[in-house]
Length: 198
Image 1: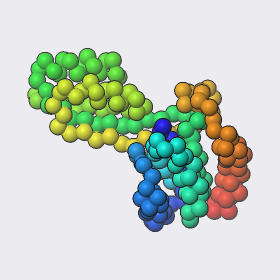
Image 2 (image 1 turned 180 degrees about the vertical axis):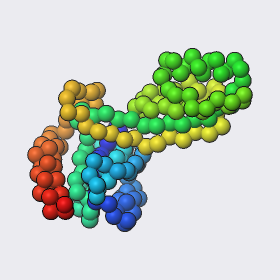
Image 3 (image 1 turned 120 degrees about the horizontal axis):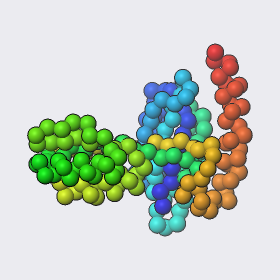
Image 4 (image 1 turned 135 degrees about the vertical axis):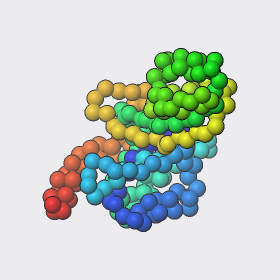
């Protein structure tokens, strides 16, 4: 099963290198890792998607504990079972003829993706969706000649209301306290730590 971990880190040149070093040293099976700006000026958010092994070991829990020990890591949260929004971006360039162009325009209406560029022989598509929808679209487009394809890693934010499919699964008992503590302490952390910086 895939697990999604959100990591809040201070901006630091060696911070990402330490995290990558941890991931490779411990041989975690990573599906994607993204890093970018977040809501705080001196901080970045990293989203790590990893796959637990079939041997039953909980690699997500191990990774969460290891990340919390690293310098400049402010907070780590396993958001797999928390109501959240997950998105990826796919850019794909396809070689087409006139008939295939019409077919792809029809597919665009169903999947609601953007057509960025059209020439006599190629078309470039931009798709922003959850990984299930992107995987389904990739499967459909396999019959066309794909010239180039690039897919970003997953990004995610927790929801403040409602539920989603992942959150309806049983939340591991060992992680309930971690999540409750995170929600109680993160606001206090920002209120005290950021006041001292400004």
